[in-house]
Amino acid sequence: MEEKSKYVITIGREIGSGGKAIGELMAKQLNIPIYDRSLIQMAAEESGISPKVFKKADEVPHKGTFSYLMRTLASPFASYGTLYRNSMSHESLFKFQSDIIREKAETEDCIIVGRCSEYILRDHPRHLSIFIRADYDKRVKFLMDRNDISADTAKDLIEQTDALRSDYHNFYSENNWGDSRSYDICINSSLLGIEGTADLLLDIAKKYLKL
Image 1: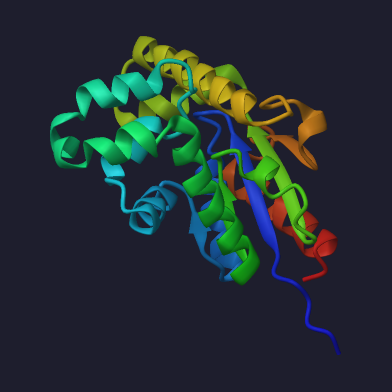
Image 2: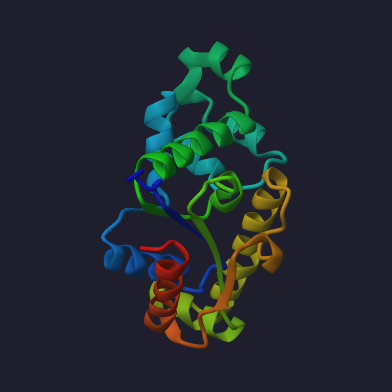
């Protein structure tokens, strides 16, 4: 019998929607790894570029970011000036991370959060793409409780982070961030909560991916 290809679940999310927490619950139940910011370290190790560079560019739109990185991080890379002038661009950073995402999806069952992963893996044969949103007031409370911040600070964080994620995604993808037509499933986590949403998505994933 021919072995099935590996499966991958990608999760896009609004900040404060609990998207990562939902992914972690799903990964635990499925006994598979989940990749989020850990992709930064992997891409850095693969490329030989400092993780600081990837962190500065992580889910940040292209415009102006590379020049900012070079200004703020110039000193640590002084001895590699030629490499960074000639070889590294914001697109290069995105490509390194994209290669890691494709490699993980090809070699193991996994969940990948953010980083345009649903678009990068659009041709993967066993791929379920999810976008998780939540009611605005629930997002504010989630961020206040998790980060011990004021409501005003939480609102500013939502506005800034959603804008950055949207711009980043829309620059590298032909699809629009958060647009239901760009994903297999879009869900409001406020309806069932973190655990209830994870359970529902698990049921869907098991049926769709024939687990």
